[in-house]
Image (cartoon, rainbow, N blue to C red; front, side, top):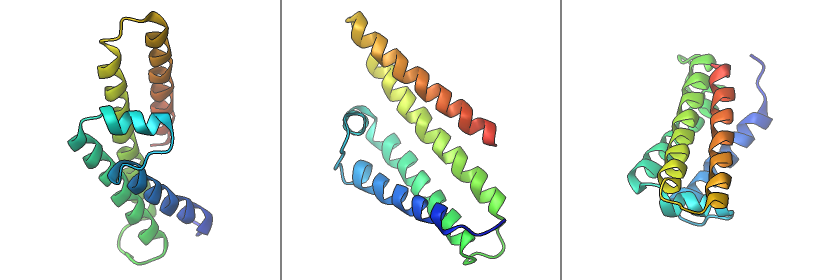
Length: 127
């Protein structure tokens, strides 16, 4: 596999974004604020930490710091951790939306959950 610094830079930016949004609580968008406010704290920290660790591991394997680990396995592990994080976001949306009586608000929530499921299906297809 050819080494590409662009994807490593994107991975580092995603790590920094997760730290800023979910560990420090400095969310920028409404969706980030919703997840930080509504998700079970232990689940948010666990899945966000797992995503950060696997992305960092993927970058270190790309740079050759860990020569014994193949790139394909770190890619699959990273995709699996992203799927876990999306499952946490989907669970949070579902748990919050169950108690909503307003049909319009529930419809918007259902559309967001459908988009999360489509994104999860796309990521699962890369495995």
